[in-house]
Image (tube, rainbow, N blue to C red):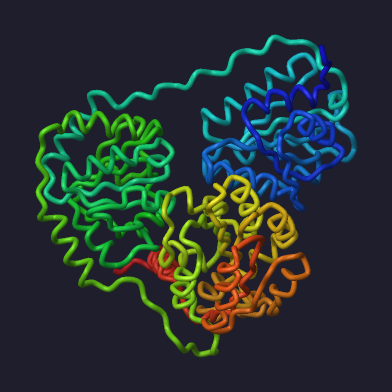
Length: 552
């Protein structure tokens, strides 16, 4: 029988859960990577340790399959913390395999990595010689069942030692989630009595595979439907209003506000979704179905702790024979057709640079239809959900929004590229500030992607800060970025590229796509900072209202 090191045992158990590992090699994980290679795991190197976790995170969001990130101990580990915090906040199962201090005691350069992880909300599982496999399995099952990031720590002095034999426990059987039982009877009665029902789906509904049941339920009720940004187009069809929140149109938001009964499935009702308290009418009844143990927002009137898919199936049984009235949907069709949509943008701007709205519209017509869109964080992040066709929820990946981080876009694109179907083109949308922050992993993306388009909204500034604080009269000097020639950098690293100063310049991208769209194309789009995104205006207005002195 072949003997395994402690690192080898960790890799062996992981190989029954993951096929892909992302990371940076160092002293603390070199033996793990050696074992992973021999076991046939696909290793995608990245150039910054934060990218290891962001890539594994995006891989899961794109494919629904677990991936692992790996770093060395100490500075390698601490470099990964922002991405680790994002995975915890966003409830994404991710495994970080890292080196750690020797089991005999910390060295002068060691830090308390488990305490740091605990501060972020991530559990650490430190392996031993006699239980490396079972501890690894425990960690992975914890990540999957809790939907969170975990750390598997390999003490430095144990990494290359022979692991002791152990009898591994069988993987946990999938848990059957309660469908809400008797509580759904009241939900069914409220929905049956509604004149203007609305079903709002979130990422939890997408992960549960509840789209078909919720869609059928909406048709049975004659309900309008909407989704959060992370459940984009999950309920697309008759009566679909689009994204709830700042990425949606005012016409759609007005219709949502008139709903008398709102069924929220798998959505936490974040401030952005609720337009900072202005989305739903004061008299509407809000029902939430979620796997959480209690309501996630005080606006909820009736809460059911259940799996969205099974609960929706139960509701269909309870409402069997109900006939939908079309009046509510007919009114919505009329108002959506007559009401204004998203602003089309302008041909001219004060500084002569591109209007990001007209650019986004033009890009939608150019980009391949079968696309998966990855977004960095920043002011620009609304343009893709607002103006681009993004077919499925898993085709919009936004790593960083839960923790409100920028700079994870390139790393996320690496993970998404590895998870994509062969006929999909990866499209990364980034701002210049975030792109510079993660620039080292442009090389990683070029190596990982078979077909990728990078769109940089380059306004030579940190746009969100310009709009929030420059508009208040604060000095803009720290908010400005010297205009970078990203096109030149991209060519130096082996990508095709072009500077886009006018919509006509998109012909270079069109030609590249027409030629087969193989490799990576970087579009360095020179946009104006004079156009403020609607979601940003909404956020700023909410902050201003919250800090305004009370009247009287």
